[in-house]
Image (cartoon, rainbow, N blue to C red; front, side, top):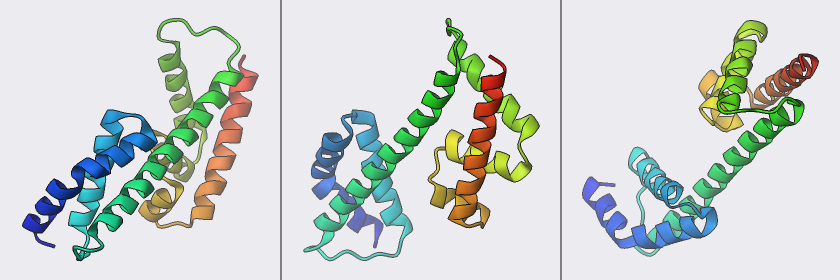
Length: 162
């Protein structure tokens, strides 16, 4: 598609796409990011949209991107909850940042290099397991295995230092 065609799609469908994202995510900024991501992926692909199917394609892209955003949030929240459940001491002021610093120090000192890399991509860069697998040229199951082992090792360690 040409830049002009994409601009026309943007002008025509942005409002509806944004409203759909906002109704799913309840966050103005994330909704704008989702719509932008859909158009960025469209520009990067060689897809040609027909006028009669363009809106359905774009709205499906928004729904899928919203689903990805929510999945990443849930994984991140579960991980942070796991760490906070293990912490019995009260966190005052910058406690969360201190806890994250401790976590990353542990990751760098105790996990094997591949596990470190997978951990960083998944939890710090918020990539999906499939995106991590693709980026590292490994299977999704390998990513899951490393994450499972890493999180368990981290949980045991933080439980032992309380």
